[in-house]
Image (cartoon, rainbow over all chains, first blue to last red; front, side, top):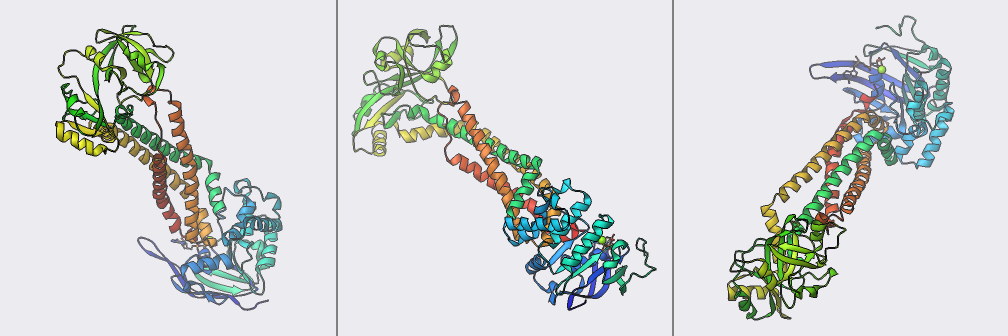
Amino acid sequence: MSGDIAVSVHGVKKSFVTAHHVHPVLHGIDIDVAAGDLTYLVGASGSGKTTLVSIMAGILTPSEGTVKLFGTDIFAMDHRHLVDYRLSHIGFIFQQYNLIPTIDAAANAAVPLIARGVNRHDALAAGNRMLERLAIGDQAAKYPHQLSGGQQQRVAIARALVHDPRLVICDEPTAALDARSGRRVMDLLHELAVGEDRACVIVTHDNRIFDFADRILVMEDGLITHDGKEVPVEEDMDGTA
Amino acid sequence: MLWIAIRMLTGDRQKFFGLVFGIAFSTLLITQQLTLFVNFLGRGTTAVYNISSNDIWVMDPVSRTPDTALAMPSTALERVRSVDGVEWAAPHLREGATVRTPDGDLERVTIIGVDDTSLVGLPDAIIAGDRNALAMPDSVIIDSVGTARLFGEEVDPIGTRLELNDRRAVIRGIVDAEPTFTSQVILYTRYSNALTYVPGARNRLTFILVRATDGTDPQALVDRIESETGLRARTREQFARDGVDYLIENTGIPLNFGITVTLGFIIGITIVGLTFSLFIRDNIKQFGALKAIGVRNHMIRKMVRAQAAVVGLIGYGFGVFGATLFIKLFEDDPTFKGFYTPWQIPLLSLFAVFVILAITGYFSLRPVLRVDPAEVFR
Ligand SMILES: Nc1ncnc2c1ncn2[C@@H]1O[C@H](COP(=O)(O)OP(=O)(O)OP(=O)(O)O)[C@@H](O)[C@H]1O
Ligand SMILES: [Mg+2]
């Protein structure tokens, strides 16, 4: 199943500097994510999961360390190239969907293609197709506020996948979904985001979908404390670690 | 991407209308007030431009404008006529008087005495009656705005008797002339007749209207008249300009209109600035998401610029339309007779709109360019 290294995180530390003090969040992370793997990142709230995947996705700069995506050191690029790199190679599904309220679901799903300069007609067609695969094709003409939370989340997922990115980063992609929709999304992620030349990293608390994982990483207080096929039994997913 | 920007804008009805309103309001105020300003100042030139046949106005050295003039002794006329290059010179009297209407109302009027034989000094466009009727005793010709003031629009004033400085005057015609700044009623009569209406004073020759012979440069003739007669002479254009300068220096017009135009600009900046930054703040997360996905700041800037351009063009359109409508609505009001909008004014308000949007857009854009894409996803 595992192939080349898709994501290589080395010595990554991150501290948030506020007006009065420095708040260290990541204390030194080293992980290699193999292409073809569906990797889960689990851990208590506040342990640094979102921070870590934001760095992997190139939208947050680490205080120390390097991140290579498919061999490219993304923080060695200048800012503009990094932005372009994200547009071409990375898909995001984050805790907040941040859909554009004044354009319909299909257009929201098509945003990465439109941003790349694909003409509107083709982009919307691709957005529609992706919504269909997520079983909300009939909602394509609705605006975000006319959709349920789960439907909005699927629009966000469609937006993350529509441009066929090599790395898909998901932060709680199934949190707002019922078990069946959740599994359906995971099926789709498995189909679209996992492959020889691509990888998918998912932050989740949702133990209903743990069986999809090829690898599970557990975070505690800014460190990876477990790396394996299964969740350790003693791990209390909702606890405060 | 730009159509998404436009949809972001137009989808938020309230703010979109607020922005368009702000721009439209500023445009309307600036265009309309500048139009009034220019046209009211233009009233300083009407006394000169209502008369088309002379090239030069000659007057006492202390006279400044058609309405602030000291009369000369009647001998001045012969002295001017003897200057080389003068084709003809006609006496011109301009004097205030009081008229009592048939209803018994009192009204301040301006009496203009025109050359007895040539009628030089009388505006060309007669809209009722006959200019030659001035030859009859006690005849006067009234201007169209004066008719409206004295009698209203419906009444035909021809044949009406007036008491002009306690002497009889009969209206024999109406000329189409633009009102002066004060919009006073103007009664034209023969110079010799005018002398009887304006008794007493020794000197009653307010101006001498001069025509230069063919091939004589008016400016050269002006200089010659001044040096040979010791009187003051101005070309038509100079004297018209003097009228405008007088209004600028002696009325509150520039200050008042200046204040209103400035207010229009400030209100525009305020409404548009506040609404625009609210709009941007509402959409900051979406902009952040776009940045995370991989939209460059360069494109974000273009998007905000497109939004500003749409607001600007629509608002400007409404504003200019409103200002035009205003002028149209008051077209028939004597106060606004002949008002028009010079092409420079809409251009000036377009520039003001541009400045308003450039300033507010710049300040609204800053938080978007600064927003950290990682922030919006937490
Ligand atoms: N911009 C920031 N400034 C200061 N502190 C921050 C910032 N972002 C995150 N933190 C802190 O870093 C820590 C980790 O945050 P992070 O969002 O990565 O947690 P998480 O594991 O994703 O939690 P959850 O499961 O609740 O989403 C938290 O203590 C948070 O307060
Ligand atoms: Mg998180």
